[in-house]
Length: 113
Image (cartoon, rainbow, N blue to C red; front, side, top):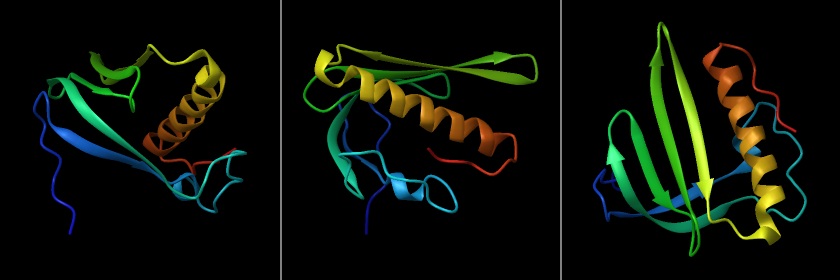
């Protein structure tokens, strides 16, 4: 059984995503992506519930920031030091994932792709 992720700077974790599980029914998987993707990562900053940063594979890092805005919360995603060769596809992936997150938090069906 998988253990809980330790929310401490320096803690390693395996980042796993399955594009086919993002929406119901599943959307079309992006070209070149397998059913499941795994990446070894490490927490670089952690300030629950406001900030979480982690390494993105062997290069770059991702930061999630949460800021209260009245009854809403602003989510900012910052992806730094990403290789030029994958920047466009990763940016498109973040847009798709964030659109699904917004749909789900609004209680709407998440449409993929």
